[in-house]
Length: 325
Image (tube, rainbow, N blue to C red; front, side, top):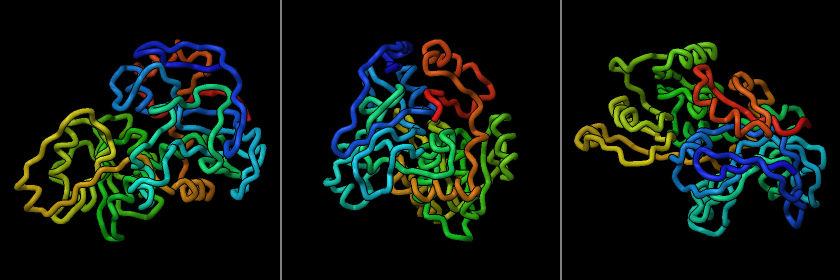
């Protein structure tokens, strides 16, 4: 099969690799779409934490099942599925609490272990989430949507809370669309004009500058240190700040201001148990991820075309076309 490997920062290579074989508890799938994540872009530049090279990227996946062992999840050959790309131990403190997204030995496909930027792949059956109606483009973006949706859940918003999402990149868009589907009172802070326009097309109010605004729940999806530090000022008294963007370094805040507001600050990592709900929301038309896709590249042309993604002023989300289902 064809496989693309990030050999070292700035260098992809295409190679032939043996076809994987389904074994006990694992399904063989045809990889149809691979979403390009900020993690992948940072890895290409050599700026991704928890990363080593060489690495096969690819954790945002829309796949078709080729072979699958008997299972109680109803997964059959021919099914189109989203892939939950988190491999966990099931036994640590976090897993026992149902917080397997923070498993002490978490392995995320394409980050800690090789992912699926290749023609075929094997995956534990329990990591597959099927849909009878969704396209592989939609299924490939469930994971991204899940990261943003989990950030909203981490904020534990009440029905009368005002929500402010800071940053409308793909993770921010996931938070925006999930909050909108949940009927929450939502605004967005975004400084990039093309992203502002995209958010307005979703029917959501967008602000170009804070201007003294505050909200009960602030979700910072920037991964930018100055923006993250400024987000402390955006939180209302007794409010909650959720950091879902990842910055490789330290940030600081004013402790008296934090104490005066009795503010809650939370981190949000990946997602846990939310894929079925997200697939249902997409199937029901309450969330549409297809407009996110602004760029496509064939698998074989990743080494040539991937670097050009940094030059695209209108980039929202890129996907790699591997195989048609």
